[in-house]
Length: 250
Image: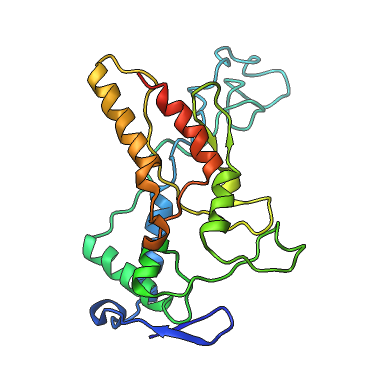
């Protein structure tokens, strides 16, 4: 299969698995899988009250005969304002059972149907290993300059450096909303973020030292030659902020 560049030219070829991408497309099966997935996502907590559950209405509103009005036994009957609901929704499970083989077949159909001319999200490391073309994109911030942004150490490094630390002291809580929607020009958005959660102090001193040594290695020697393997090293100013917090781990 040909790999096209952003300009529509052939930028290379990639071999697809015949057992997957050569399978027959079943649109009804894909529809069934989507319906099952959407049904499973429903909370099913909907609930209305019947006339037995609505508060009040225990006394007969007026006597049975002689008033000229219709006969009623309770003000919580369904036809009254504030009354109960007839055949209303009750909490239940909306999930639909679907065999594993049918799910797998639906996934294959979706992959085949969207293969021709498709754009996929991959890690930069995988794209470099497979020789895939990385598309240049235009973000909301780069529209003014009318210049597309190419993925690279500089463009992604600016994205990382633009993250705001919302924690106090050594609490490195990052606001990564700018990763997905950058506000600076010439910045490539990040759609997948992995992170480590560590504590500022550990009851076991040896564990604290081990965590500190691991992080020091990750932000120090571990940053060398990352860009050659499809990973973006930390910007120097961002690395300095993290290094200060790592030194205070006890």
